[in-house]
Image 1: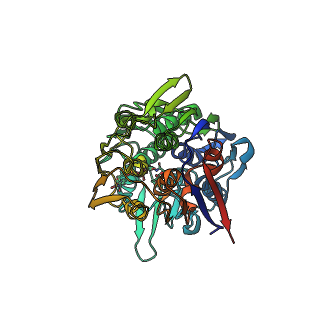
Image 2: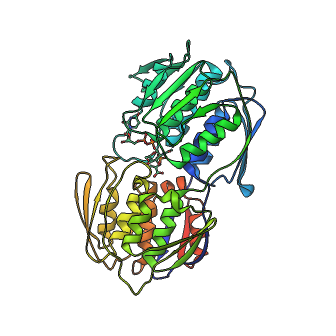
Amino acid sequence: MGQEVRYRVRGGHALNGTAFIQGAKNAVLPMIGAALLASKGRTVLRNVPIIEDVRRAVELAEFVGAKVEFHEAERTIVIDASHLNGTSRAVLPADIAARFRGSVLFVPALMHRMGHVRIEGVGGCNLGSRNLDFHYRGFARLGAEVIEDAERNHINVTAGNLKGGRLYLDTPSHTGTENLIMAAVLTPGTTVIEHAALEPEVLDVIEFLGRMGAKISGGGTGLITVEGVPELTAVEHTIMSDRIDAGVFAMMTAATGGDVSLVGANLDHLGVARWKLEQMGVQFSQQGAVLRVRRDPSVPLRPINAVTSPFPGFATDLQSPLMALATLADGESYIHEAIYDGRFALADELTKMGAKIEVDGTRAIVHGPTALRGSEVIAHDLRSGAAAILAGLVAEGETIVAPAYPVDRGHSQFATRLSALGADIVREELD
Ligand SMILES: CC(=O)N[C@H]1[C@@H](OP(=O)(O)OP(=O)(O)OC[C@H]2O[C@@H](n3ccc(=O)[nH]c3=O)[C@H](O)[C@@H]2O)O[C@H](CO)[C@@H](O)[C@@H]1O
Ligand SMILES: C=C(OP(=O)(O)O)C(=O)O
């Protein structure tokens, strides 16, 4: 399971300076899965975030037989999947796959290259129900055989006679869209995917697949058409910057009343989060590829209403840091989590720090402003861990966030990057 990790934060320092936004977790994971589709050449992925989910994805790719080099200092991964075939190990074992959500993105490549795949578990943040029915139904509509082994909790997917078809998503699932595209790219005929996700990472994955030789049109419109091709070739690609990492740094800057330049961040990728933060009193200015974020500490943050929804709506992955930020705002903020039915575990942790939050199902009212005080808090999931660190940056005294593996799943070198901005934060590995 690896070492136990915790973050210790002492509040009271405004963030100032330059932060380097990492490559996007939710783009690199599907790309590692997509790299396994290439039957020729070696894939090179650049601007790879140094996060635990990527380390797990590398382990998984190696487990199924790909040759993978993760050059962490160069933030580069090199993958050779050219030799995969029906005799390779077509299993996604629970001990790796159940530790991150992105493991489900390996299914199409294994189905195509090996003819079948057994999925022994899929992980990710514990946010309530996280179904995969759109994925499995889509594979079946293309002609795959999908059989659930309920006793062992395994799913077996066998390629069979794949043929393009008309697919749909009940809601525009992010990984669901990526998985159906990846299933369709090597499937003979035309596949149409209705109600597809619009997230920038999905578009980055489409661009990557297109360079590999896939024929995909309609990305960003909600209606995607894929013409199957017989094979794909490895290419080089630079991962887009992580809009959630950027959003978290923006909110941390806002919380501390700082002034930070986010290198690589794109304001357009923040969607509605941009407008909500501006309403709260945060100032943004896009200066080419650098996004400057400022908040005047002499003006109180204003309270906010936010409802999470798929891009360009308010990203659910930014909902936890928004809740932490709202504890500082002058009045009542209303938050409706409309994507996940269990993403408010943070409220209890912030309550330990003095926050006043009422939770009713998927709705929360945050009563600000609160003078937060340091406490020991749990990172229940990736973003609640990041949000707890945000709270720690402004709390009086010391905040300990543990266990913090979930934070390391998705934020690269958090303590180093925050320290460079003036924060008092250390990451500790416990024996
Ligand atoms: C690795 C990755 O990219 N993770 C992101 C991805 O997760 P992920 O792709 O898993 O999230 P989805 O967009 O699929 O899920 C959204 C909602 O749809 C439901 N659903 C989804 C698929 C399905 O087959 N059936 C079903 O009912 C889920 O239970 C959830 O309530 O998008 C989420 C929503 O933006 C983000 O929080 C995650 O950071
Ligand atoms: C929910 C998240 O990730 P995952 O889907 O990988 O669990 C997240 O990034 O906040």
